[in-house]
Length: 154
Image (cartoon, rainbow, N blue to C red; front, side, top):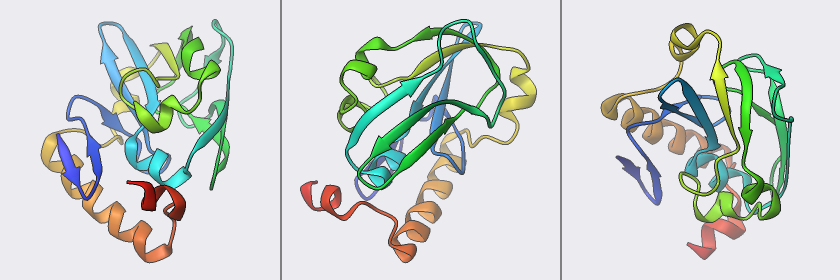
């Protein structure tokens, strides 16, 4: 598991470099969520909206939206495909994103339509995840992009 400061990124996930979503392959499906880095930068999550089951989403396109202390905007799919499952628990309790980003706080499960191609530009593997995390953390600190209130609570 990659660790830097108070951020942890599990090695078994793939990570979108820009939007900080994780993708975890589970058999022939892929589960998405917001990584700990993304939730730390966004602040306390207040509201989540997701596209319904059965809808198709392209890689890099919105499959929902998120409202938090320092971020309001789209959730962009790290992998394209058809939405097979929604997480009603995270819709009912969006704060789970801040407390359990890799467990109860997943957003959707998709049936991918071009998985091998979609994974090519995602960060994966312990060494690559670690170096990306450290550089991204420093960049965010330099730009003042972390939610200060959440930073102080940790």
